[in-house]
Image 1 (cartoon, rainbow, N blue to C red):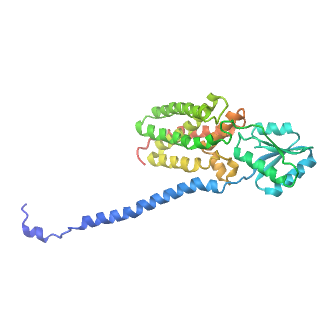
Image 2: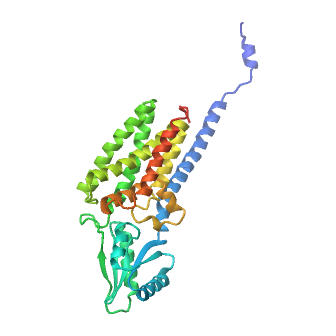
Image 3: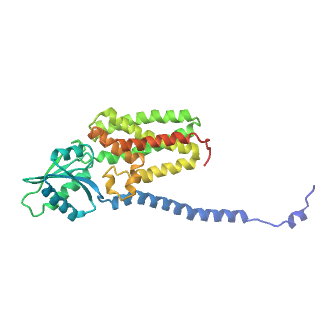
Amino acid sequence: MITTSTDVADRPQVVGAAPEEERNSALLALVAVPLALATVLTLVLLAFGLPMVSSEPRDLPLGVAGPPAATSQIIERIEAADADAFAVTTYGSEAELVRAIEGREVYGGIVATPEGPRVLTASAASPVVSGALTDMAGAMAAGDTSQPAVEDVVPMPSDDPRGVGFGAALLPMVLGAILPAVAFGFLTGRRGLQIGGVLVYAVLGGLSFAAVLHFGFGTLDGNYLAEAGVLAAVIGAGAVGLLGLRWAAGIAGLALGAASLLLLGNPLSGAATAPEFLASPWQEIGQAFPPGAGAAMLRSVAFFDSAAIAGPAVVLGLWVVVGLLLYLFPRRERA
């Protein structure tokens, strides 16, 4: 077929339409991309900043020991100072209170003695709570001739008395779960290699993280291998859970899981203070993620002879089980 110049001239001309569409797309991107980035950064700021800004003690487990008449007076003073801050349990003797502190039933307590109240703390459970108990006892004794004596029943190591290492290690632990899940999820489509690679990485990561916290920072002073086992469990639980999401729900599932771990699990862990410093249900949500459960378990193993580790261990185990169960679904290549 021969096309004449007349035929060409008769056709409608669309010169300039494509450039106009490109300009509109560029303008849309110019508005949409900054708006999306600003929204994401705002959510990140809220996720990390809001728990800190609204942080205050809520039903912190506290013990009071001594004769009934004396303990009643102490409880009245505690409730008058802040009725919502502490959940008080009474004990018949100082020895019972000490056992409760060492068993992680309470964060500390006040003992009524003939010489006046004495404060028992456990900075290894939370230096922030330990300081709050000391301040509260001092406020209760305001006007008295002497301040109450304070004894740290389970102290933090002298190299890191404020437990700064716990806060510093939290984000690397979260990234330590996310990065191998991303890497092995893209490197291989074989479930055995994915799971095996993540487990090997978790062991190596646990050993190296524990070495830094134990020998480098001096934050931990318990059994090194036990501490490494806890950290390996935290990393492995998060990574296996994310890999399961990657397998069953594609890249979108992995992205959602990683974002939840970073924006919920990290700031709501209570590792730097205590879970009870978060309002309900945020403290429960935080303890349902590997960072929160792992931090609680690590303190128990490092300082409290593994007391009260059942709950955190169940949480980490559930993340592994759910991640493995997701592998029973057909593999989804795309989001």
